[in-house]
Amino acid sequence: DKLRDVSNDKNVHKIGYSGGITLYNIGDDIFMKVYPAGTGFELIEHEKQYAQAALLSNIPTLIAYDIVTFNGQYGMLYELPKAKTVFSHLEQTPWKIMQYAADMGKLLRQIHSAKPHLDIIPRASEVYKSYAEKMNSFFNASEIQTLINIIDVIPEAGTAVYDNFNARNVFVHQNGDLILINMTGIQYGEPIYDL
Figure 1: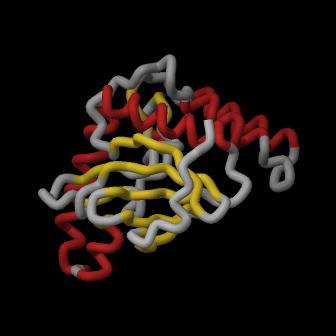
Figure 2: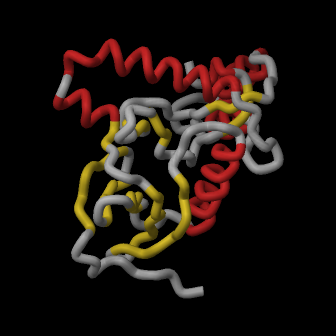
């Protein structure tokens, strides 16, 4: 099916940029992530599935409901009434850093206590081994094998792992609750992968 194009929507306003992804609001209650040029549709569809799996696992995340195009690139639409990232809040109120650190610690603990649907999201050890195997421009074969051996020592677990936990990937909802906004890296495994 042809995707809806929102390039000419006059309610689109840029609110940030993180790791190649540009963030926009559309009006007051829609949030859009626009992916870098060349990002495959399959990756975006996986993120949508991961976000839905996270919600079913009691992980607070945005509701992903539509994939669109914006200026020739793919975007994902989420329901988001009036929220900003923790990073944006800290830029405006840096004296609240201890409060946000504590709140983010509680959120990370909640993620690590969740039992996600294992048939939908990938195993952390396999993801990290694939990272190691792709580092041949930095390491020789023996060093890569050492990395894989280290990963093999980490025990397997069935809890959620976020993989990119930082203040730019967490929104503060208008009621003060923290919500994850980027589910591309969600995996399952031992929480040490996040730490």
